Length: 210
View 1: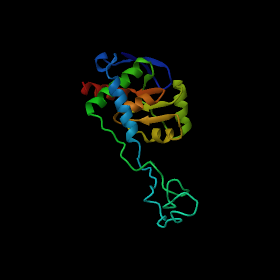
View 2 (view 1 turned 90 degrees about the vertical axis):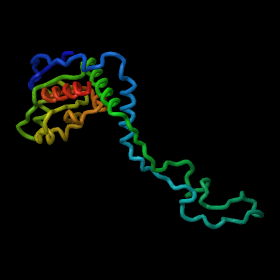
View 3 (view 1 turned 120 degrees about the vertical axis):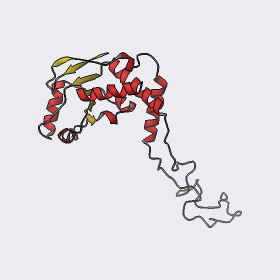
View 4 (view 1 turned 180 degrees about the vertical axis):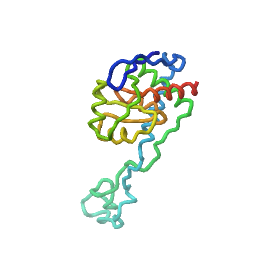
């Protein structure tokens, strides 16, 4: 499969090829992709929600009134769930939402996600993006040359302090390195832009997973 290659001015420079054997161009891997994304989102949950049950609410040790003779319904505690300030029935409690996915399933899901984005034409490759300063306007100007729309994932091979600082105030762009990618991040953004070294690193990662 061939991907369009642009320079930092947005002009076509040629094409970059990735072997089809590294991709998944059929329905294989769909379930692995679903399981991986579900597990990733579940692992982001803190699981710290907590309510107090009847036994945990302070007070209520004394019976409000005698059992018979008052004409009112019988009551044993003012902390009953039926009462105001009473305990909560079936409320959330701390729990571990995390799910585990085998490494081979994660690798399969990564290949499937990247293959789908490549087939849809949502991936492009550019020359290494070097900024002379850490100013946000310089970074935005460079992106405008590429005519990108929607949320953008920019993948760079090396840590660039100017690039990291310039992109922090652009809410629709996220900068990542190849080793930080996973199936969910590949699906989350509208467009994915790799620098040429980063794309080569991802291709090598896929080749090792064969």
